[in-house]
Image (cartoon, rainbow, N blue to C red):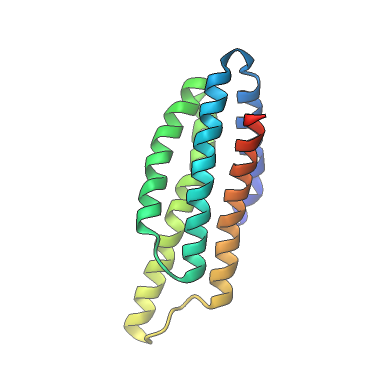
Length: 143
């Protein structure tokens, strides 16, 4: 997940754009509220990865957030900003799927998961980092 290095730039663009909406404080507060919920969801997905469990329900929840947030961000900023932001969320949603595929494949051949506990922890921490960054943006928008 090396691409996470560009996540702060995408979040920064989103934050600056919404902070400029001084006349539309309601939109900022709505985005802040949504991002707080997204951060909680992403954090739970990270914990599931760490635990070696597929977060089916949380991934479905994140998918719903992505659809709503894309339209919301595009309506209040632009399509490119919405695409850049939701790209990260789509990737996070897919991460547990990769873990599930790896585990199923390995179980068929060796009856033990391919991902080591260390690798699951690394992957989980990367996903949780995304949650922390999103939560930070949420808190900035509330201020």
